[in-house]
Image 1 (tube, rainbow, N blue to C red):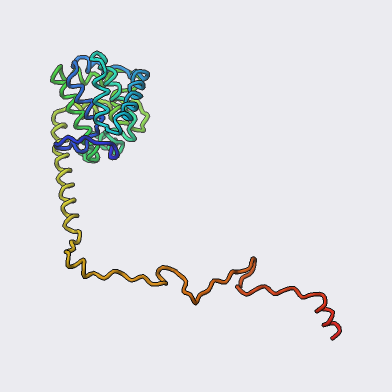
Image 2: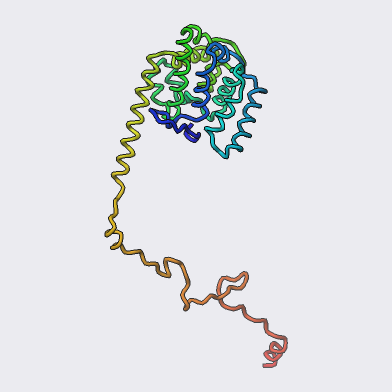
Length: 276
């Protein structure tokens, strides 16, 4: 998530939040909550979502590379009743990330039911996106109830809902069931959400302190100091330039010295030597 374009909105963690995730989740808050909840339980309509992604690419060219304006324009053109397309677009975007929001490095620790320790392994960019998604699911819980939201993670489908947020390489069926419960707990539990917020503030404080320490360590040159500094002199040896005395002598082919090749003696000279 580090290389994705991020939101320009000020706030804790928002400077690391991808524009795509921020704009889609913000748009869903204005949609019907029941339709949003049902859309999370539906399979992705790849044809409709792929067409929607094609519209985003075309709009991106029209907006001359403005990511935020591109997403807003496309979302505002979608009819109000097509909430499943918007949720499907978000699902597909999450699935196409190089690593999931809950990265693979957390898998072993989370499977040991040590959620807090496992989440400490998450990079700050992933942590910001995870908080945004947690807030979205907490909104659904307030609109309905915890059971209705957690039930989404137990539904059968082409792609299990937990796999959209956390991917792993294990293929044991028992692990799928257990990991699905862990991901649902991370996204829906209020205590986990509070722990994530504290962890994000801690990481941002550490980042600010490191940046301040780096600035203090950089040498500061005054105007007088820069004037008195001697520029390094460049000699012919440093530049690897030949002087006038070192004339270039072309070397004949297939010889190891630069001396000219001996000329072949004529037949007349050989006959004279025989007479002698």
